[in-house]
Length: 234
Image (cartoon, rainbow, N blue to C red):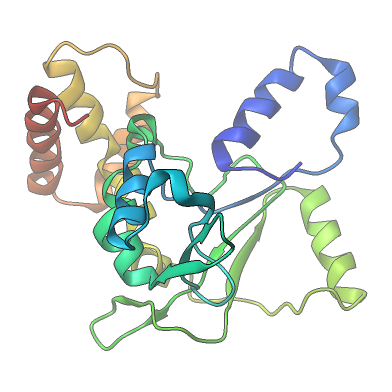
């Protein structure tokens, strides 16, 4: 099964009560996910590309390159494109589904195999999104996943090499790092305003993940969450 990290987590939880389904799934694979764009975000992307909703045939948020462009295909089969840095930084990434804002599993911790972009860094240790030769970082999170990767590599389907700069991932994938380290502040902020419709995380583990950041940043996260909740943006 291939799906978003939340899809994989859901199916794994379901197989705990359905042995028949469990036997049907040999491998689970996922990709790093920064959140699914909302319908409004998609329509705003179309608007910025001069496309009306009733003209849309299909939407591709990225691809056909690395990182690849956001592409809207019209019913007349013509296409409109927007660069990744513009589509995700200005539109899609700023309006994701509400529950995606409270996800700490964007790196696919429960799949046999998960992979994500291994962005190049500029001189300021910031990810570069200029078009280039694509490269991924791949995690085998189970023996089954590791064995499959090795088999695929031995048969020539994949080229693998060891990655030793694991500490650089906080710079290469800063959004995922920030989501995991600041989530305790978001949960506290939601609880302060009396909202109970939030994921039931182990708060102790969330605070352990927050040890790498300053208390000031954590407090700002909580206060920002409170303000956004009051405004109705989350």
